[in-house]
Length: 239
Image 1 (cartoon, rainbow, N blue to C red):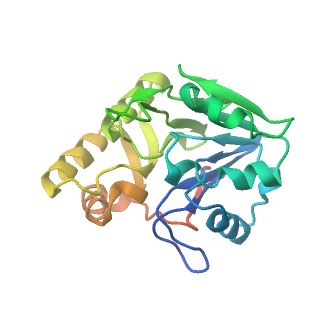
Image 2 (image 1 turned 90 degrees about the horizontal axis):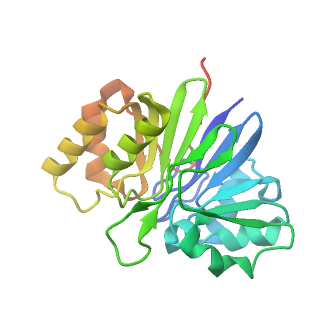
């Protein structure tokens, strides 16, 4: 079964550990991807084990941006696996190349790039921050439609979703991840949620969206809101 499992988040379901950061595991018929790695290797390892995911079986690691709460768990994958592909913003690739196992490839990403047959990077988008200056998100083509996975959405969740819609040519089925609204006032969050509702059917905000943000998205999306925290598994196939 094709699924998306949140394996690192500020909040957690029973048996999983919560911590500031984000990571999601995407299991497709043709392979798998670990999107971001959270902040701490020991927490990532615990949550992967709880989810029944072996680090050595991870085939691709996709880093949205080189912040500690998204790339901090990468040493675990480097230690446990000797054969995976690392897709990372091109400006950060050099930081990891010397640490990677011999069979591991660091793939620098700038423009929209296919990670595998049904997984497409949005390409780098400016964050408006000094460093990192760019962030990428991931589009996965599934039976339920295209889904968008974001790390922190520094470029703006609406702008990222618009680019995903442009690249896919259709409305998104699901948008999941950190929306970077934890410091935003309610009015701004409501506006963002309403704009995003025109671009995606379902939404599963977590990580840096903030408690108020999650509450507002639940109100705006209603039955199309999905509670997301470490341990949440989302099916990517029709029931």
